[in-house]
Image (cartoon, rainbow, N blue to C red):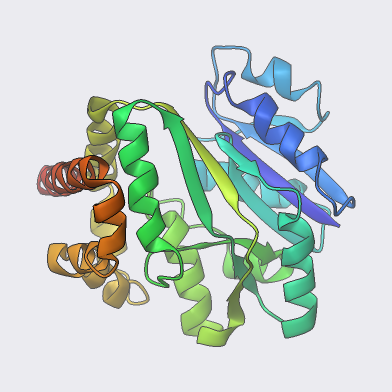
Length: 268
């Protein structure tokens, strides 16, 4: 069995699409667990039409995920955000990769879509991250190992996606994390620049612990270095030639996001 743990907070516009995509997986032996964080909209009401296992936990996403693991009955766990839509073969490919290669975790590549110019820029950006091991993070794991490691670091908000797979690699070896070819589609909705920067600023205020963790230092240095990040964007100039406006917008967006992260980090 695969236990799919979906974390939510006021996601009534996304949750049905996410849970429907789980139900439509070609791999059928799944358990859906929704862990909400005090939603004031109809998120929980909608979720209960898909699964009876809808809970409240918090205060942040890491704690929600760890709570979900305690309720999980599966051999494997898949962590999703409510604005993610899994393509039909994701879980099947993850299980197959785990069984054939004895992996502990699996990276699922992501694409994004949404409404408006900035959503298109975010989609443009994500193309460059596929296959980059210091940016992509595993979401599918052996539950036993996650439980043994204590789950996600609940003192982190934002970088927890990176930190747990990094901890696994440091303890069990680099080759214990694999990847599949099926995608998660990330629904950005109607994305505004202000919304992006507000989120990055908030993550910046939580960044101190992540950058000081022994298993994260090497990753953080590459993730936070503008030169390293921008070098990725120029390795495939064909993308810029095809979509110059979105390329320029992406560079502006990424620069402002880095300023927001830095400003948040300096405020703590």
